[in-house]
Image (tube, rainbow, N blue to C red; front, side, top):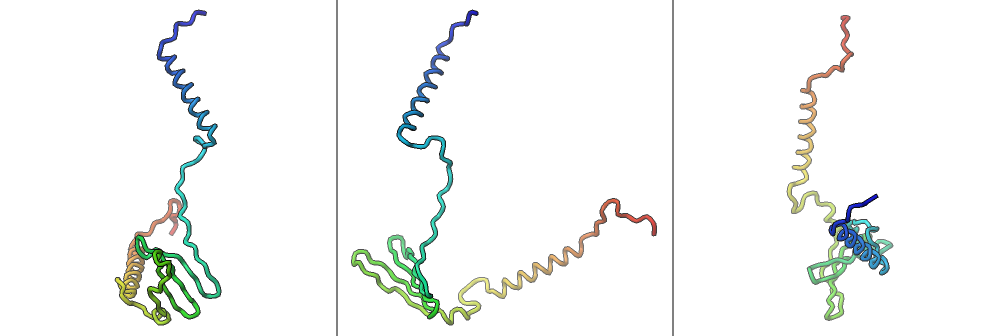
Length: 148
């Protein structure tokens, strides 16, 4: 059997494959996973909350460069905001509020009002009932009774 002489392109392809295998071997020898890891979005970690017995502390970012924490007392129904000032190494009380009566408000500084939302939901349900009642009745095939 006589084989035709190989062209220079074939030798270039063999050289390219050998070079790629060498690169793969180098990467594997350094302990890096190659083509074995899957691409996935990193999950967003939950905000840490520390607390118990009705008092909870949660870190917060008050401004782009200002950090602090919220302090929530569920028994006293109070919320406090503290700002951490790194230069002063101090935790400063920024705001405090008792929210006991806030929870009794139905509609304060919100848009649309809750009663407008309730009306829209009721109207949509009413319109759906009207539209469904106007649909023609559909009789499945083979269900016709030819004997009166």
